Image (cartoon, rainbow, N blue to C red; front, side, top):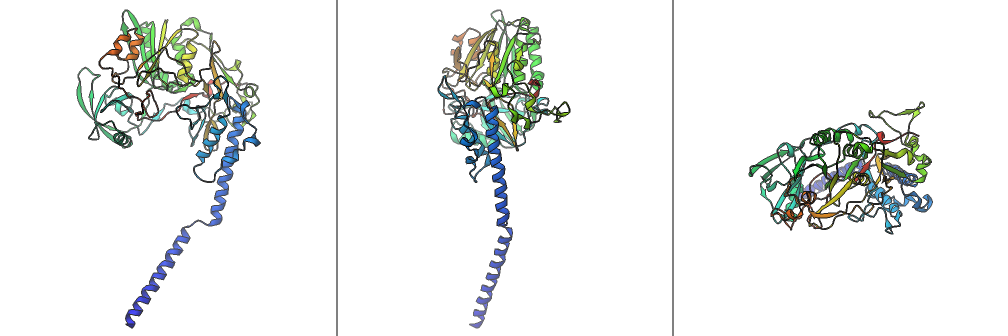
Length: 534
């Protein structure tokens, strides 16, 4: 019995020692309460300072700054919550003050985002040290890494097809095309339901993906078994180009995905426009149905390729900043240095140049046509657009309207009427701490002083967006409209129950929207090359 008592006592003592040791280890792993308090205070001070900076910049550079309340009334510090991600605090602040910018014509906020009312339509903030549009990003190619370069669309029950493919991507190099019908993904037969869509979303995040497809847009229809491996590639913004000969007409066609920086886009578009010039086209179809905008100088480049030489020197468009910026009194911009292509400071009279040295007057931001390229005379331009066609895409449409015959052909999942996104405003990035702030900063207006398309451009006619057809296929309903042959939109391959579109590029009024690609902002970006000094 004594032995047993001793055993239990020893075991209890050992347990106590283990517990004490474990407690000491836990205590040693915990942060010092004083250190935690100091860290919290430092973070609060930094975040509060950023909240103040965001609103101080808005008061001077926001396009509708005259509708903002005073700093003391707005109280940016109230958005500090002490918990959660700091980005949420900044986004809530931006959302709050953008509600104050009221469009008197519509009696609602300029930044009301009908597709996502919880975020502003134009303004926002991004996290991380992103390459500035004032630095080498404007001269370096855009690289997309860890990407297959393709996107999917549901077409009908149990049918999924490729929506588009980047020709430079792993998918493009494997010979995949828009319209290819997917049979299996990673060995699982295609289904059109939420479970399968989540399966696709998971699959495209892996290092490789196995696809079985039927290619109907090639001379020989056959099954293909493809294994794609993710790899970095230089994005090709040109999805497709060709010259269409139809009823003694020569029509250039180009599907353009993104207004990448001018050097990259020109590298891919110069051969296209040279071919159009050599073929002496008289009409042009520009397919912007999935184009959410990008660099403004690339828009200028494309416009100068299209226009006839007699427009040289005429007004292309003007930029309108708020009166404070036009008068050179937005002195907060002294805190934003200008960097050259090698990320070195630019100097003026021996001092660092800042964004406060830029001329923001209308005269200093009037852009004139400068004819480029071999295209001689185009009688008509047809734009294929969707409700996601935005920013630089809309600017291109706007600046051509005063001078040329422009027709807008809308595409949507069910063929109902389409308006473009509606973004006649642009911005350049403002650095705050480790963040890039983008505020609606200027409004573009064409030669007729028109630029109030905040609710988008209406289309002349809208048809079904049918990914059964490859880009440039004459049976595409949108191209048929341009050809003046809309009766062919009844082609059996045109299905009335289409559900094509994307997670971020919604050209459909259906709840089934699936599209697997890098999410892109609706952007009208300026680079340092676009500015003039005072």
